[in-house]
Length: 556
Image (tube, helix red, strand yellow):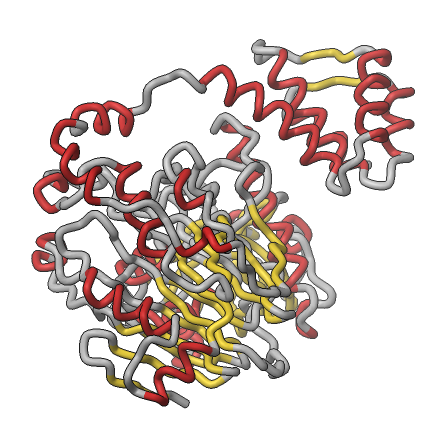
């Protein structure tokens, strides 16, 4: 009940007691309140308190109850989104301007690009495929302060729930309760890291906060193991802390006598820090094979089209090496986690490195290539930072208006970034991987070259982009969709253009490299990409095939 009232109050909405009683009787009252907020915000522009009459609430309740969709709140919210989309439909975007500017340059190229042909035969494979989590049409906010509060509150609540499953954190105190203790005592609590830094003396100082207050936590330099562990901690992640707390004493400046310090001077020394972590995943039988790609960058003059065509030939069974041919014909799913095209205006002077300077034609070229893949392969595509989706994460699926030719392919599915999907009961977490950037730059011992270590750490933090305000732009949503609530069997990323693989507690963690040779930007940052080396889970066994040299690697 308190959560419902707080949510309404934070959004400046007041309802009568009778309406509130009716809302409480719903099966999903919080879902209805979220829907109500969306509808009210779309109608009332004033930031003052809005009082909603019982008759209006009743009409919304009726609409909510009568909705035919299983996800009622989402259905109603979609109506509001569609209204906004209709208003903005005719607005010209920067990308559209760029497209118009380059029309003449692409005349000859347009004639060269063939229409998709493979999917015209109407043959489709039998797939046991399901989208479990997709955020494409769940962006309801305007990026106001109250939305950021909701985002971090959602993160804290989700991760606290995971942490409380740990035996050491079954019973925890709020930070305000720790401050209220009369004497030195042991404590356990859960909080979000507000600040963390190393002191001149070699200790680590951390400010931990929850909804009730802030706790100063010292990690002693004498605890070498905890110091090493804490070097991987970052701001904005949620952790459990066990330790001891007491009251400092300090001299009264007037008479020189000692007096008990106030709450802000409480001394807290950590004995253990607990991340949400990963429980071991039971191994599941795979009687099919999955291929993983990302960062294809079609449209760039550094896209290795010849190798990509060789990859397509292989997946179609058109390959001389019999061992490779058998693996290719066993592929049932192709996962592409972002940057299928190179995009337009992503970085300064990008146009000088583009072979195709029209975003729609880049997707048309992608459709031409992917249409050659046999229809017995389901292709699932998520967006990356080079695709025609918003930059802030979570990213909605690539819009149909740019990738119409890809949408026409019968065996292609589009999902958001991130997305959780099921392939024959095997859960795959698809994430393009911009959160890797911040970890590589901000955490000791982390690097893009060894991105498997970063993926492991993201799993332990149970968040795909824990650092807020760094290189990865995060959208201010009512819910934090980048929390890893449900552990996957496979965690697939891209973005950094460097292949990696690690099996961590039963989770296959895969970064799929790129089909783009080294760019000028990468040269200046000394990034050496892994080009055309495709990772495959062949009936549960991880292998890689290099389509520059057609060499196969096995990894344990």
